[in-house]
Amino acid sequence: MRAAYLDKAESNVDGSDVAGSMGKQKALGVGSIADGPLDPMAHRNSVLYKLAHLFGQLPIRAIAVGAISVTIGLFLWHWATLYKFNYFVNFEHVPAPLLVGDAFSRHFFDPAFHTHVLVSLRRIFFAYSIAVVLGIVIGLIVGRSRTARSAILPYIEIIRPIPAVAWIPLAILMWPTEEASIIYITLLGALFPIILNTVHGVEQTPEVLVRAAQSLGANRAQVFWHVVLPAAMPSIAAGLAIGMGISWFSLLAGEIISGQFGIGYFTWHAYSMINYTDIVVGMLVIGALGSLSTYLVRLITRPMLRWNRKLR
Amino acid sequence: MNLGGVVSMEKKAGRRLGEKQSTSKGQISIDNVSISFGSGLTKKLAITETTLNITPGEFVCILGPSGCGKSTLLNAVAGYVSPSSGKILVDGKPVKGPSPERGMVFQQYSLFPWKTVHDNIAFGPRIAGYSSTECKSIANTLLSMIGLSNSAKCLPGELSGGMQQRVGIARALANYPSVLLMDEPFGALDAQTRLMMQESLLNIWSEFGTTVLFITHDVDEAIFLADRVLVMSASPGSIISDFRVGLERPRNPEISTSEEFIELKKQCLSQIRSESLKAFEGSGGH
Ligand SMILES: Nc1ncnc2c1ncn2[C@@H]1O[C@H](COP(=O)(O)OP(=O)(O)O)[C@@H](O)[C@H]1O
Ligand SMILES: [Mg+2]
Image (cartoon, rainbow over all chains, first blue to last red; front, side):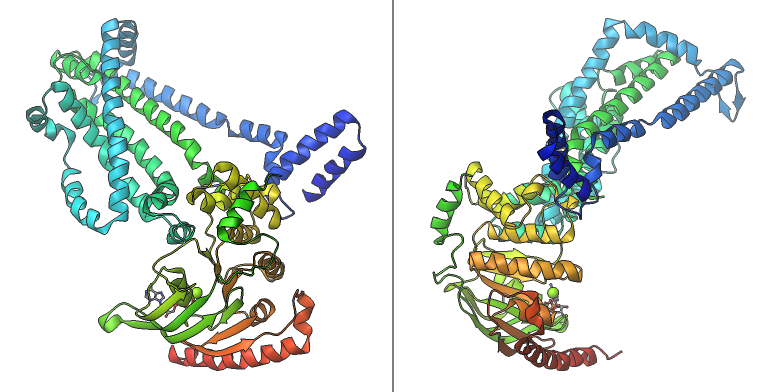
């Protein structure tokens, strides 16, 4: 690579203007990554490599296998409901996929259904945002201070295993409005995975980096901001993604309280009206929104983790 | 290039780049220091009653078998561990904790992996409150000094081990410390890279003129670099001999074949061999 770099730099001297400037650009591109013969990653900066990499990254095979698998699953579902499969698991009253699809396409253009989805999204947004801030702050403190850990850990250990549904009566009593109780229940779901992953990440901070920052003049807060937080970031990001999934899970429980709106409410309501098709529509919409928002979280945290992938 | 930031920084630090420092900063005095870890039955004495004086601008190497307490002594000067008894003064002030006045270079890679090479070097000045243009010019000056201007935007993970250690040295020097503490900084490098790093360190040192306290278990490295080589006893550690290296500077690798070098090496080796033997037998002698 070093030789190629030198060649290009030389062709820059005696080559024609256009070729010369192109050579220069390429040489600069290589030079900015490689500093000498020791760098094995230099070729990764070439345009060709990037293109090949991008194409190779498209998970065509994975997409194909996934699509086939889903088709088979739908077919099995269809088959089981068509022949009223009843052997240990009973499909007699399970709505057929076509019925569910039909109901979904009707709801898709129904403003009332849009309201349900929007109300739920808003609850997730508020609950999750609060959980992110609280979870990371508590996690950082617990991870770095022994006293805080002894004080806070008992609460975490006892409250964490309590399922969201169990909170409903108390949440109604504790909070002034229905909305607040629902957000509270949703928030709790997201909070614990974020706290625990942050603590885990903080514990993995290499002590030598903390010492290095201290010897460069960093005070406690600066060590937190410049060392502990970025070092914990890969683990925090994992916690954020898990927390998003669980907050949807808890939202469904919380919306039992709600008298009118929310996709969780929609699903519970369908249940009490014995409208099985709508139950499945509600379930699938929750599933889709849940995985979509988790993907969004991954997308947002990815740029902060670039250094971590480059280490590998 | 705009060097305004560097110049103003040097004024504050009381010295000028490219000129051997003539101020009296960088004096280390270790006075009857003992350091132990743990308490009760598990109490372990790592350093015992060590006294040592280092004059400003001196390059001192500490040699000793592994486990004898070299890192512990250095960490005490850095301010990471405090002595159980005795005093450590740097420029007359007692060491209370880590400080940018005492730059540290570690054996393991200790660059911030999420910051670029440039930002790693600019970290100290930035924490000290210099403006971003000042930080930039300090970082660029150091980058060109260590020959890595082209890698300014790289992440540490993209550099070789030797390059990373050069950045580590530059990062510590960006604060213009009066003392540079180095704990086996080239220990993990291959022999060839090591030799290059030693020469390059001497070049940088000749420009900065800071006091250097350098730990190694490599006799050749110690003699090649130092004004003074201190040999430590096996655990619990203390200084058992103090060799003055009279080899003239600037030094190049050929110096290691000179008579004076070989004579010094013999003396150091015989001291170390007897200490290593003690450590070996003390640990059960397998
Ligand atoms: N934080 C610590 N806690 C307990 N013992 C320690 C600690 N640090 C060092 N020691 C002990 O002190 C002795 C000296 O260690 P160290 O200074 O790392 O030796 P060296 O750097 O010369 O190899 C060793 O026996 C080691 O086990
Ligand atoms: Mg050591």
